[in-house]
Image (cartoon, rainbow, N blue to C red; front, side):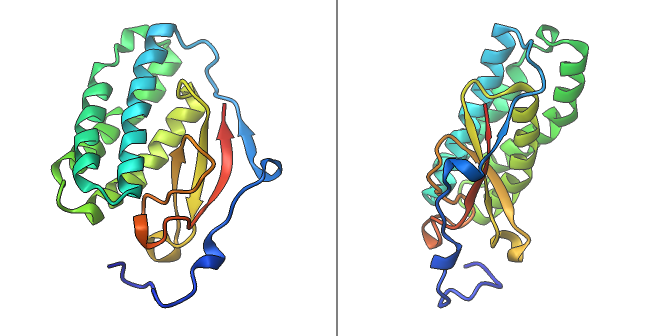
Length: 181
């Protein structure tokens, strides 16, 4: 259960679909990421997407398995493939992302705890996506109701909202705000 939410309230007002006209386009900062580094970064995003989709499906066990895969992918990136500026930015998030992935992995029976770590992880993955790209177009979505209406964002591969913070409770709560090329 989510404290502070009146589940009898009509939540349909929070669901929305986004037309292409109100989605802000973002181009990654680093245009010169090498193919090997890009492939490793893409692997991190693939594991993150599995976590996102698992949480949207209320599947804490799969989210945990994906957290293990994400932690491994983060540790595998050969930073010698990065320029000094790229390495500095990756270093800024590496330890924290790995820690969040490990917490998600270690809490296969506590989806609420997974979602708390996912919220911070998503902010950091957003920073990486804006810097490096993700090897695919991504959408940045936002749920205004998460964390006692403070809101929470996540990255997704589709414009369709599948809310990882509430899962089946409020699956379509949220709105796509940006697209990262």
